[in-house]
Amino acid sequence: MSGCSGQKIKQTLLADAGYDRIEITFLSLARCFFLSYAEPETQAWEIAFVKSHRDLGPEIGALFAQETLKIVQAMRLSRRSIFCFSNPRCPCCCDKLSDHERNLMNAFIAIRCNKKSEAHLHAMILCEGHSTETLLQNMSHMVQHFSLHKEQRHDEALLPAS
Image (cartoon, rainbow, N blue to C red; front, top):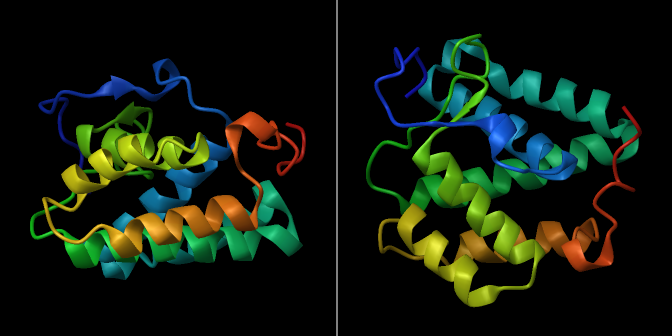
């Protein structure tokens, strides 16, 4: 869903989710890619690359966006139904977290925390019982490539200070 939901869908405030800067950046980029698929004319994928360049710098930004896109594509190819997301361009929606987004984030965080069974559970929900292998491989690759393991406490080192 890319338009304003009119607050009809049960959502959590993003500020209450407890995500760190890496997780917020990941979700922000993923939302741009979701919007690009939902409304191709927005070319929101370009916004994702601009945001990643701005937030992560020229060397890391493009690679982080590319890895995020691989995760989004893997999920898209496995799911059979619509993925509900909060429109990153809607002022009344962008500060909310949909249930589908929460499952995506839970899988990503579980990978970061090396909780493979938990990640698999959330991935199964995301992929609606279909193949999760590519999704989980892509998430694991991103975490390994950027040293995003939570216990290593490198999550803040990747991003420049605000």
